[in-house]
Image (tube, rainbow, N blue to C red; front, top):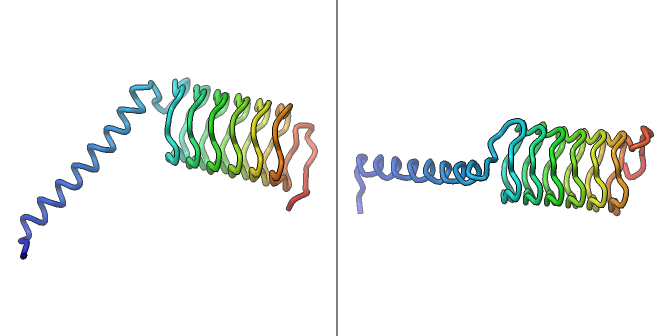
Length: 168
């Protein structure tokens, strides 16, 4: 069967419209939860596994109980965010700013936190098993009850200001 150029252009245009509609639906779904990028966003319970949040700006936002597993948050700016019980397992968080963030009971297992700013973050009872914390800054962070088994602490600034150089 031979398809002429007009039919091909029509099919191509329809495909682009379908993709655009799906993108708008995804944005509306996130927006319906009040999760708009910017200070103080309400993203409680957000489900975005594998989502792309690279270089986003969510200071003082609430991501309690969010599922951001395997998400891409490289270079994001989320200081003072509330990520209580958030699932960030296997997420790419390198160069993220999470200073003063609440990460109590968060799942950060096997997450990439290289060069992350976690100064004064609350990581009580967080799961950091297998996490990559190379060059991460944990100065004045709270790690009480945190699980750090198999975590890579290489040139990591610890809560007391010392530099941990094992596991390099």
